Image (cartoon, rainbow, N blue to C red; front, side, top):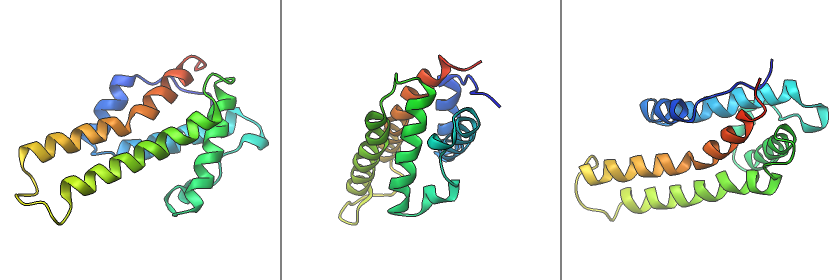
Length: 139
């Protein structure tokens, strides 16, 4: 198995259509491809650890190291590690503010849906960056 070239537009559309579930699949399949490509030193651990709080920080660190190795240093491990973490915190905070208990109005107002879609797309930014760099080395 080698790195697969994925269209950024396809990644975006699938993420929107599946309400973010494709992002999780993207992490899984990319992890699997990088584990086959890279050596034991850069192996990303078992995928279910992605979902366990605190342990998922270590999982993301291993994923970031694998991204750095797979892109031959074009994406640094620190950038690969902090991009999803920082954007995740920002996205989670903004969603809490938008849908928090102090907000009045319906849950599915048009402005909230548009706002949620913008947060979902913003959470895709690290994946865009990773995939565009991985596409350079895909065969």
